[in-house]
Image: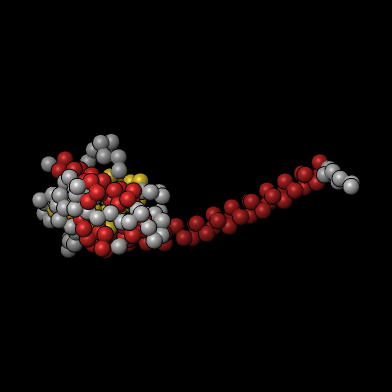
Length: 182
């Protein structure tokens, strides 16, 4: 058998071709991003607004509230809905990645609703955190809520205990941060 050796010119030519293909691909992605970034931002804002209305319906405008961001690492924002309560937006770890959620907390410190804005949980398992049957268990819960396997009232999703526990922890954090506001 004879073995063919690549000359240094062939290697340089292949490297140059790879560079050109990569540059073109990057350019196309950059152009697509330029034209879609505003649409993506608008849709994220719409999803956020829908989540806020779902967890704590309010006819007025939600007012941003300042809080100690260093003390509450998973809390992204807190918005007040007049005297009705607060919406706490959090980003925290689930089983497969980050979960972004909005949690409504009324003036008495009880959960009014939970809405999942974005997640990377496994379809058919952890993704069930978005289903009403799971999220509705949190309405009316107060600080110290826990999964039923830990003595609480929240039934975890079968084969998705990590995702279920993440939502419980986020809800407890939302109540704690609202209580810290005074």
